[in-house]
Image (cartoon, rainbow, N blue to C red):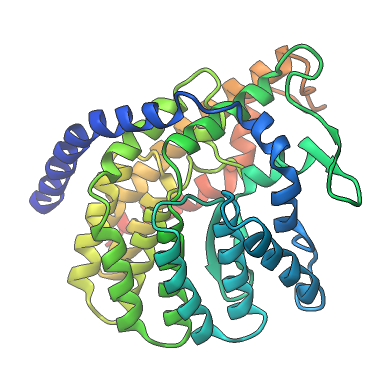
Length: 377
């Protein structure tokens, strides 16, 4: 318990020290930026290439055409903000579809060198799916503009096309404005991809080293978490508090994924002390109150696997508290959407809280079961 409290104190100190400078930096970077939907429309002739054959379930058969489209972005628009996204997606396909993981790792290392300060809409890589694009971006960007065969814009649909911006569109603008203030660095996605690929090759030590290096470069993570929380409390901050498509957790950060991957690797290598220490650090930074309930549950599982029953129970309880707060937020938002005419009450309607509870019922029941199980130890 003393160790747990110590981690909280250390991370809260970092939290306070880093917040002011990071927030000022974010505000300065976004001060003169064009509204997100208007810029996306303007750049559609380039980023549309990123989506060529992206949504097909059979990725292999459509890969040659997709690969050519991605290469076109790099070759014809090398100075655009989309070139690094195309490079990441190409590397992901090289590993997942072409089964050339070693070659893809070389490419990702070059991406880190070529795009040291760029930001990306790519969220990560896994062996089955390859590199994936941010789901919130996919929900909003594709329908903003449509192209003719010569790739000029045939039609566009900005948010204010009808003279007003709806609740849902305001939420989208708030979300993307925040992501641009506190973006996902291309080099971090590439490095996380390298770690995942090394693990797929069975090189657990090499994967751990990459993740340790990635995490060590982020002293500002507590301040990013603070900024996310503040933005989520914005009247239009729902997508930051409940990121699409599942609306199950706040906006996800690549660093959290790196922490979880490294903790799991330590467990696999029987480095339980290191796993425990890193798990405590992670929850202290991003979810000491259950805000990322899924992280609290994950860390609870780590504690339980290592026989730390009371510590596991503490994390499961925090996760349950976080889910209850999430239910309240989702109920409040559904009520607002209902009042604005965006949703209808179902036939078995009791309350919006009841509807939100139904959505989260499986997770709540599981956490309650885990808590009971921990109390028997």
